[in-house]
Figure 1 (cartoon, rainbow, N blue to C red):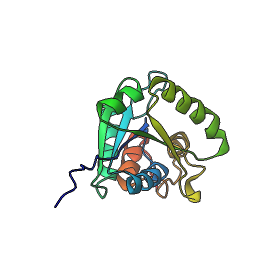
Figure 2 (cartoon, rainbow, N blue to C red):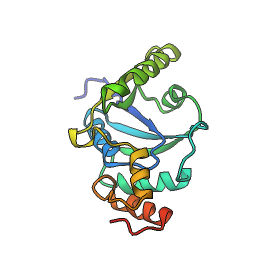
Figure 3 (cartoon, rainbow, N blue to C red):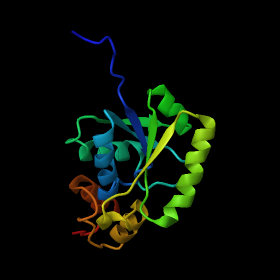
Length: 170
């Protein structure tokens, strides 16, 4: 006998440019999937950010990197994140916090998102301590000089970095 109460899926959005996706991003994502039934990686288009990889390349790298996470999908998010979240019936936005320096910006964004959509929750997740210094900009910079980033990004991302920089990255 059922109670007649339907379970409403808990859906979260994990937005970012992911240029490229790193093990730090994936660590936050793996923490999020424990709390939500579905997580949609919202591949953001930020006109203020010049990306190394095209939108299609970033999407392919993310899809390749999340194969072991069945409740994760990737979506195209050209506009406001709260609108994207509403369109996907999401109740939460996932944001990674690496260090105190991230907090002020992320806090301001969370408050703005709450202003735009009062029911939207922002969930801050910290990656494993091993990834607190890690971001895509650092990965690209080290890779551009031929440095070893193999412990920072998935193999498919490493290959694409090698192809972009035409170096013998390890």
